[in-house]
Image (cartoon, rainbow, N blue to C red; front, side, top):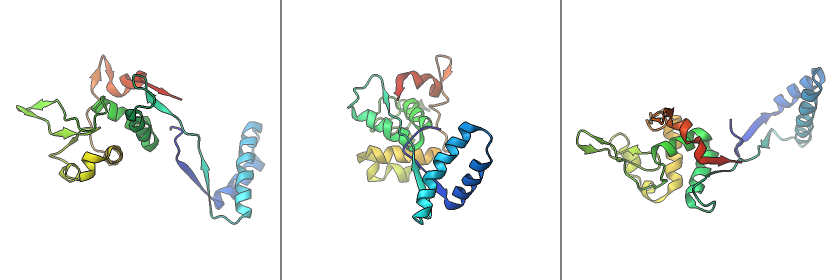
Length: 179
């Protein structure tokens, strides 16, 4: 799991469980971790807050060949924040140029595949997406749609394609720096 900007939700019931675990723990290091979390939760509990949010450290990712200020790195970071490496690899293996208007170059049955976007959405399978005006004007919408489709188990072939003896999703890792 990546260290994205997601927030973990803890209920007050969990705070009480944490309190019991910290008192019962034999492992001193674990006890210190539990007590530290417990102290944060107790402060919130005393304020009568029903839910507590702990923010994790955010990782920064960028493609080595792009300038750090390049908008394509913003696309990569946005994808990484949404769903981690899986979404970045999907976009890299489907459309490594980060051109949001690119059409697939795959030809099947003498017809160029009608797939577009950062993750090559097929117009025949998803006309409702292709016909949405945001499809053509907002790369964030494209990234969110790629994320939504992947989450709903839409099959994308780019990440599983073999490149130099490796799955594309493994092969492309060397193109990025994650800090």
